[in-house]
Length: 83
Image (cartoon, rainbow, N blue to C red):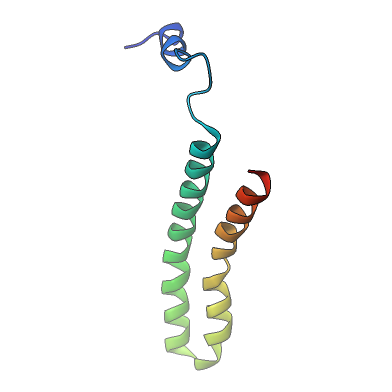
């Protein structure tokens, strides 16, 4: 097992950050996309069940299904504005 100081030496071996700015942005958007997909899994199945019970629930189900996708859109816009 590596000690904390040995691990710090490995991470800082190049004298700079372990990730570039583009790499950190890619990880942030990727993790956000995974979270969005996980949220849509439950929302989508609940929306399909609600629409199967009552046809009037189609529009609210569609809105709730599309709502998590706005997180990824905001992440992409943030990357292009900051980067």
